[in-house]
Image (cartoon, rainbow, N blue to C red; front, side, top):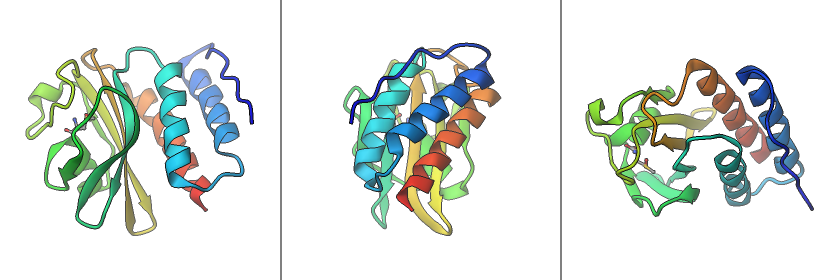
Length: 161
Ligand code: SME
């Protein structure tokens, strides 16, 4: 399969609609969670500006374990009681953190990170993991970014079947 990601244009919602279309094309016909997580991380990391880490953590039954990502090497294991990732997984709510240094328990994998968005990944009642994005810019993620990235996370879950 060859895949060409074209540059995103227009308003933010328009850009996210294009990115979602590209994500769906990339996921089409593939159910492997690792393969899809790897390609989605690469797609999003290269499509959106001002990101220093994009990737997945998968729940192993006890804690979150790092999966496919783009960016610097990251913390391998995160308990559900720790960090922005643990908060997203345990509350089932997307965590949009404007200033990671003000977030109690934030885990600094890359000291360049200033803001973070973590979308929990649930298949029904079952925790699969989280989709995590870091930025070196404070307050990088708006509500529009949150909605756009939640839609991409849903496409990821739908592709797993
Ligand atoms: N900052 C995250 C840890 C994962 S890294 O950002 C890749 C957290 O506090 O959960």
